[in-house]
Length: 246
Length: 251
Image (cartoon, rainbow over all chains, first blue to last red; front, side, top):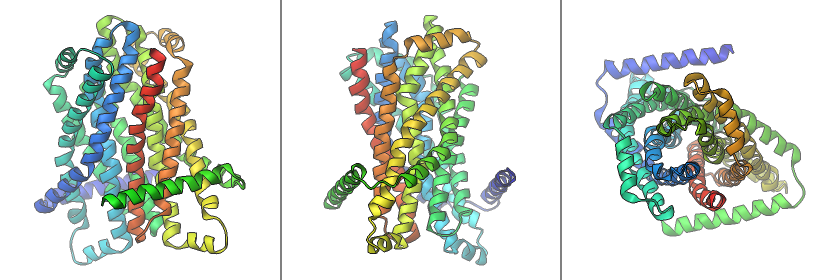
């Protein structure tokens, strides 16, 4: 109990240090763009695959849920509500946590156990500024873009399933989906993506910094990073949905 | 590049076959299996509840805004149950088994591989697949359906909290429609899905760890690849399972 509280306090201090390093020095622009490229580019293929298949299943189950009502035409609307508003942002966040987040945690953890972080401090380079800030800026730049790409893929895949597998009317699907999605909904998705990006980056880097020694310590830090960021993101998702859409 | 990935698929096939033959033939490491199963299940139980519960709440929140149009709010619980039993609970429970259990298996086996403990086991004429891989594989296969049950309960409760406490729907309607409109097939189907996902996670995690190379960074990479590859694989498999099983039920 006490150790859990101590961990939370430690995490808070870590966030404060990262925040201070972000504003005290100029962020390393070139490295931030490099990180953004890595995070975005590495996560993109897997994200496309997952968005597409979540879209297909959403269409199938939405159809099954509305058939008893005779409301199967409303699949387009269901996609806009469940897919665009809810699933796409949280899905992107969990995949980026699973891919980029674990990479951050394991890279930083390996640097920690090989004492490279201590070496940075010896050279009077702030390790938070050098290691965390570029990842932080990178993930904030790229996560909203990934969310938009994922929304597009998800809607496209569910359109294809609705029209070709379930035999629904295509123009009607498009019309219902676009009537349900207000432009401001997309901005809310961007807002969610920012929040999830901040959570993922801080949690993953924190677990990397505080790893225990040895290969199993690195594995454990990587593991904890993805689970904790997924749990925090899905709790945050409900709170944000209730505030923004409730 | 192409040859490499084909060779990887072939190695994975051989690995799966060797695991499968050891699963069906004695001797079984029952104690080890129970220990790993308990470890995965107990470590995942809280995260599964913490993730599926808010998803149930979100489903109810968005579902209500659709059913409001028909004035059919009473059917809300059937939407929540379809979404949770068939899709959300199996997928999210398995995602967490992959993220917690699968990555732990890959990390443990990878650490054993690079510190040459697995080689040491082989030299002592002990079958490392039977003693170290099969118990972990079976743990994933048992834990995923078990956690799916916990996830179903959490999701339905989450939907209840939003519908009844937050949005003020009548509580009795929620439960009545839930029992009336949920087919037993939804629950068996979801559990069967979780079982299939557990098999995939177990095989992929153990394969990644068993074949890890390249020091501490290599173990980190194996852990990372395990989570990503197993989640992608079972989401793709999920589409075909849904089309095959639930497509048939409604028609």
